[in-house]
Amino acid sequence: MGDVLTGSFVKAYFPTHEQPRAPGLLHIVYVLAVAKGCAVVAYTTSKPLDGDSLPLGARVFSAAEARALNQSRAFTMRLDRLARLPITSEWFPDGGTISLAGPGLQAELQAQVEVLLKRHREHVVTLGP
Image (cartoon, rainbow, N blue to C red; front, side, top):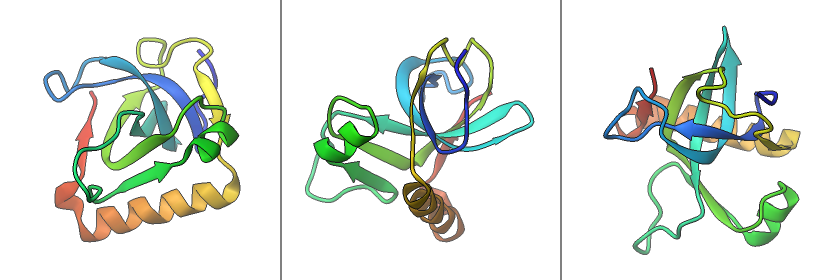
């Protein structure tokens, strides 16, 4: 299992709404926090989102931003879709680390999630065991 560090993009088995406590599909996630053998992660997707407006908590990364983070295509981070996962090989595969966000991006994302949790907690879905 690779390092699971705050501010890193890693591969993880993000749980699904159908099975919120079981490992789901392999996704790249962003690690918001690490404590006591668990990580709080945000979901990312490379699929374009439907509609003209983004959901609350969505952060779009352009192709250039994605390349700077060692990812092959543009993606959207969903800070409104989180999971609290144990740091084990069941949830985080070996060699899963993609990149580490710089301090500015880490601060931006942390501030966004804090506002979302303080002002719009009802829009945040948290999955995991």
